[in-house]
Length: 453
Image (cartoon, rainbow, N blue to C red; front, side, top):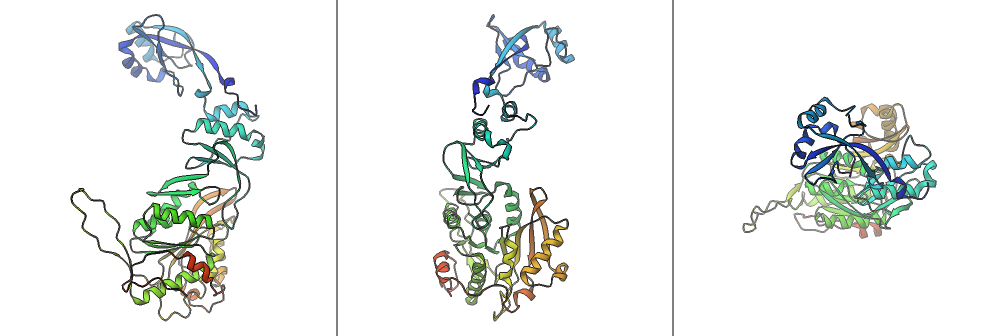
């Protein structure tokens, strides 16, 4: 079957039923619950058909005869005690009674497994079908749509993720042509066009884990921010965030999500190359602190009474002279961007704090920690043989493919790298991109606008 025929899933099965006085149905069902027929969306108590004062309680299919062979001792005793009658009955199972797994195993050549797994992004079910299932893809998509109440669009991934913008081509298998998704995560709402941006619901725990490392008053530099899964919850927590993404669609969605979650006075959105953003963001941030500590508005508190206004809270001070944390969530190539930190503070008149850099990456190595730390050393121009001297932690995130795992390297920027002669990457910045991207309202002691180069 390559075109779904729902009528083909109609089946009549014989069962045994107990004729029970209507007023005792609840008690009897409770007493023999382990023997009652349990099929999703199928009622196990039906009308008698002969006497309105009776109902029929349908018994499990393992009980095949009216002498109650295979029934529990409790059921047998109850039948004797209440003088109940066991009778034959028939029930009709239709397409609605079968699960997606059962349907697909019935129609696909290999009945041992069924492709029912998918990632859900809002109303979209995203599948990644293997080659042997492609000729049945529309049937599979329709079954998933039918059996998933919160899904209205089913898509299949057509190629690998584009390393530039982290999106991929997909085709609609079933449902409506609508890629505008809405997702709730970490007490925030995110809206985006899933066909144009990157989102992975399986990273929910990793988003939450890193956000827990941020504290009120921290400053966050999110280099590959996407639509804001790290940046926006951090801002809601009481952090100052500068968030960047090269993909114009991600940048636009992030700006919308910043407003949607009412954190526009704590988040600045940028649309720049990651290396350029790192160099410019740190330079501009340090320049702003020259006139005094930064601050952001307090976290809004709901009033306990409509008639009694909430007393104003003081602003949240941001004491650091550079960003406290940097997030680089582009696992395929993020480690390579560590070269932008070499010489980052060279020429600074004062010594700022060294940021903690959280870099997501992939590895296939049997020694993942060593592999990741040595790659980081090479990118920063740090002596590779001294990788054990780094103030770093390598955290396992998830397996993404056979022999390929995702990790997060959390590393304090070494001073030897930060103050090294600049050899890691170009110093020239794109003035037009930076001016178009800067959008923030940071309260400074002298009320100056963000510094520009």
